Image (cartoon, rainbow, N blue to C red):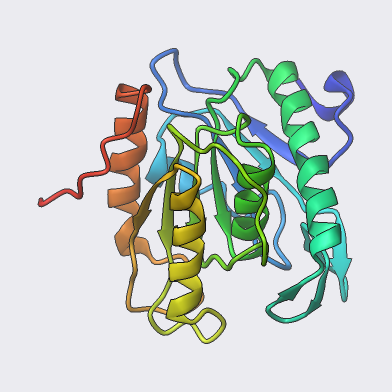
Length: 224
């Protein structure tokens, strides 16, 4: 099924699940300057064989796709962010219906700008996603909306040497999500503003556990 057949005009890629026993479906959201193809390799690392919906941001900054506007680096246009988060959520609802993705089954996996729109969408539309993996994530809202994120698993993996994200920002993001009921796991790494390969097996384990225990994730860290 292609974009013309579904009527979904926003640039995206959909990969069908390999079989009925596939792991949770993923919603992939790229970083600034990326596109809907960038994060597709994460499927094999995080939820092998799962269905994947990967979406391109529609805002251009100096020709580079993003999911929302910013005033300057590290300062978001929150009015635009709220609107774009709702727009993306509506697209996800329509795409899920077109491709047969079960309600509240998607795990959003976002990098940088994609992580920020993922957390904004989680806060604004708490019934849309089963959880989120936020890689190189910042705080989306100075005053986040009230939301019931009970049963939602959120994994935050930021680098200790990230020049764009101070440790206090990671702590603030985690606190905002926990205050709204999310099960938050922080997986820091020694790198910078990047996806750090060594954390991916642990994220994969937690995503698999979420599928095995839909009533609530077991966020116990592996000791293997």
